[in-house]
Length: 89
Image 1 (tube, rainbow, N blue to C red):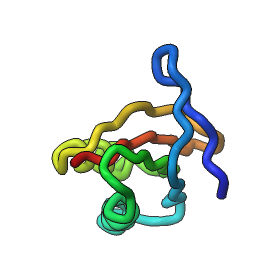
Image 2: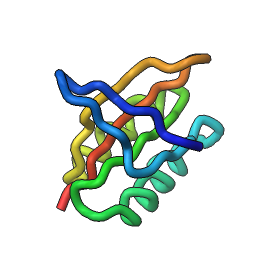
Image 3: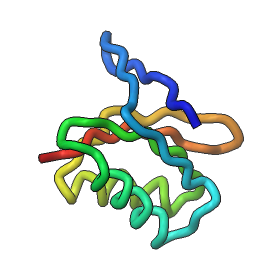
């Protein structure tokens, strides 16, 4: 899947990688996100598509707790949430 760009403030960001976890359930949602982030270099960004209340709460919070930055969150189609996460150092 090709990642779409995000508008953050006045700046446009093109994610370096994309991950669709809309079919996953917790706790596998963040496990998959963490593995994808581990494959990126510090400062690179990941687009994550997710669904469900638990992943909506847990993925952004856990990413931040692990030193990554959630740069943007957008409502997608069909109840999906689209996140832009920058890998921390």
